[in-house]
Every structure is written in structure tokens, then in C-alpha cells.
Image (cartoon, rainbow, N blue to C red; front, side, top):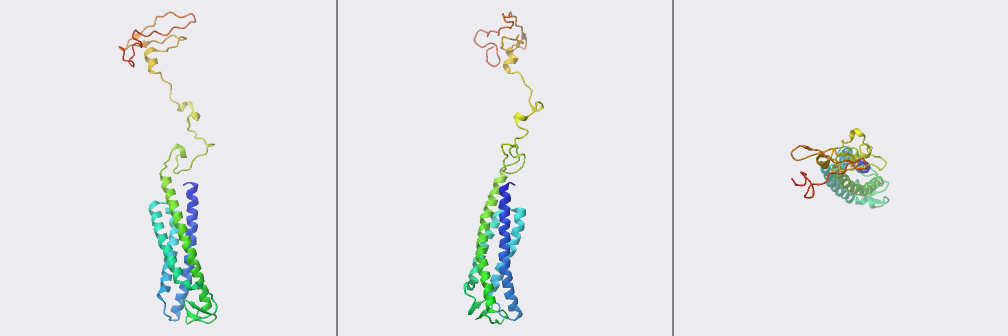
Length: 267
């Protein structure tokens, strides 16, 4: 995996950890409220149970998401599933913010809290100070708003990570990437040892004669022709006299223009 994939996984893991912490804060506060209600035989409202359940599910999902990011991050199926679940938990955080909207009030005087309504500084039937319960609810409201943005960011990161993984799969091992998977490219200063200019003589193909050399021999006048073969396989002798420079003239073509060649069609 290239550097881009590592960076995306790191940020995705960091967001998952932040989601886990935010959800755990909400879960811990409302677990405290529910425990105090249960200890003092107080009625537990349904909306408090809803906040407890939503925050618990978000905490578990963020924890599992952190683990899966390290192992399965970027795989198209899991990236699509994570995007769907992130959208669901954006809605869950919005629901928690709506249910704890009383956290926007000031925590002095008469306050409305999850443990009841009363004056700041006095204890509720659950044994929790109304002012203290108001401040805890305010924390839950603020953290739920922050959690909405965490899950929205996670949607974007999952999309980018999935697209990066899909692009990585298009490139198999080849000399362009040193026979490794991925889109990482080699710098111009890192030349492969398998390039033609660096190849040794043992890696080069031997030279071979051309069809013209086989049939008519060399055409230069500085060397004696090595002879040629007609279409019946007999070697023709070259009896021309040497020139003044010591070489031999090239053979003249046969009447008709191109001589007897299997490649010209003149027989």
C-alpha cells in the first residue's frame, strides 16, 4: 500500500477512536443516571433508555470499526457497509441531541434534568443534585453534537479509502513498480537494473543475418561476396574480377529489375 493509503487508514482510525470516546462519555453518564434511578426505585423514562441504547450501540460500533480499519480497511464491501452504518449513527447522534436538548439551559435556579425538576443545590429523589445532573446533561448534549461531525467525517474517509483500494487493485506487479502491488512510482533517480541500457552481454540476443544476406550475400564492394543460393538450393559462384581498390563489385541484378529472389516473386 502506498503512502496515501497509510495516511487514510491513520486518519480513519483516529476518527474511530474519537467516536468511541464520545459515545463512551454519553454511555457512562446515562448509565450513572439509570443506576441511581434503579437504586432508589425511581421510574426510568423511556427516552433515557433510548439514549442509553443508542450510545451503547455507537460505542460498540466505533470499537469494532477501529479494529476493522486496521484489518479490512478499504475493501469495497466493508467500506460500503461502514458508510451505511455511519449514516445511521449520524441519525443516532442527532436523536440523542434532541432528547437531551434541556442541556442548553443554564444550571442555576430551577432546572429540568433527567432525574427530575428542582432547584440547583438540592437533591433529587434519585439522590443526585439537580445542578450536577444539569451539568452532566449539558456535557451529553455537547458531545452528541461533536459526535455528529465525527461520523460525517468518517463517511468521507471511508469513501476515499475504498476508492484508493480500488485504484490499487488495478495495478499488478510489474517492472514499473518493482514487482509490487500498488500505484507507487519509482523516482527518476532509481533506475531498474533490468533496463536495456544496463543489460549485460549475456542478456542480449545474438545477431543474425537478414533475408537479403542469406540470398544475395553482402552488397558492399569492399568485401568478397560470400555467395548466394537460388531457389533450387544450389550455390552460385561469383567470378567477377577484383576492382582497383582490391574489392569486388556488387552483383548486377538479373534482367527484369530485381533478380531471382523468393521475396520479389521473380523466378
